[in-house]
Length: 167
Ligand code: SME
Image (tube, rainbow, N blue to C red; front, side):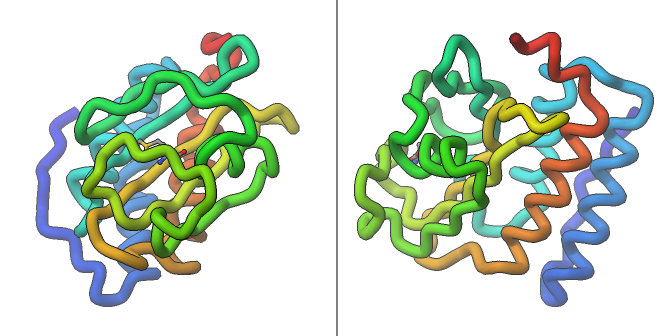
């Protein structure tokens, strides 16, 4: 597999996410190792999506979220369910868009530069596996189109990977 980093055109966001989903399918094809796939998913998102300062995974291990493969600055390792944006998205099993992290009660500031965030829960066969988290240094970087686009990328990762190996 050779990945060529090309400028991604997100002037039409939906089309941009379609292109990204096709690329991710190609990256994950024929590989089911969850760590390898999480690493490549985070790297693709970080490389392709403009204005993203952190992109990566937290996996549910021993009843709490533990940081997995990511791109960006070093991050908090453990997050309790229900805490922060990640723990809230995981506990509610809902995607959460936070336009201004400073206005989100209980937000966990790993990187002081982070201003907005989107977190998508990872559900496989009805079981919570973890979350996919994206941060930006820009306020209100993520909208509903981003949320749906990132949910699609998360679903591709879930489908492609043997997630039972993470337990
Ligand atoms: N801000 C997150 C913590 C994880 S980092 O952003 C990588 C939260 O509040 O859950």
